[in-house]
Length: 337
Image 1 (cartoon, rainbow, N blue to C red):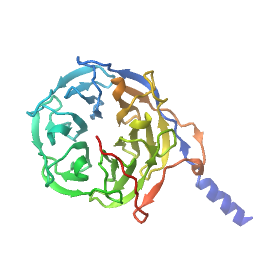
Image 2: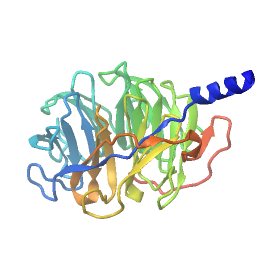
Image 3: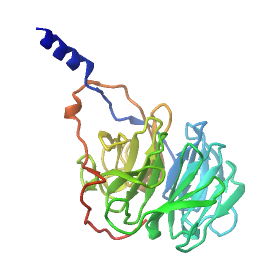
Image 4: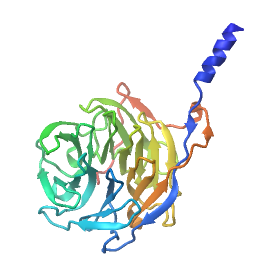
């Protein structure tokens, strides 16, 4: 009897986790056009500490909106000068509220005030330290260091807050710690670094670039943990990872070890809650998710939902995990942004 009581106590102590519902459609803003508040293919977005939303599009500009989606300001146009862009495709905000822009075609990073005034810039075309061949994504760690996916050089570069080169990792390939055209990077509050590439996978590293694990397999459909590139990432304060699965017209959420949590998106289309090539994602402290819905030329907001009840952890679905001791991937993909 005593053993039975101890066993039951252990079962109660190891209670299953709460299931989490995917956020549901709440609002949207933007439509196709070149005027203020309109978009030609929004390509990236980020939130600042006040909840304001910055969005880039193929008009080579950055637009700023308040948390409800009301247009506030805009800056930038095509060019090579200060606060000019050639396809800005990645955004980040530092601890001081300054904006960092991955200026893809100009092979540089620009650091700007929230109103668009240039603070500093760095980078040029090349393969050397601090040079780029298609920077696509930016993330910052809690110490303010800046990490950039240098796509066509198949590496991640690390800089100080003013753009001083510090380190790099990655080579071309499909193995652990290698990249096949890295597309996006995200960093959680514990210093874990997540990088996606065109092999339809997400790799996890520490801040020095040491490989930890990976997850994801190619898949054009609805299976969890599968992706159809490009995959663009964000991480929240709890260490969860949000993946804009553009080719599958959905957003997937995982914990920091690649365990699937939910999938959001009703399929391809232009109705509320549907998506057409969701190219970026951002999440606020309340769990609301913002999606750059590229081919619908809009941003959609999805509001977080309450837990639906308790389900056994064993019933959760997850993608393939691969530790640092597992074999290499062999799939090859055509390169692209």
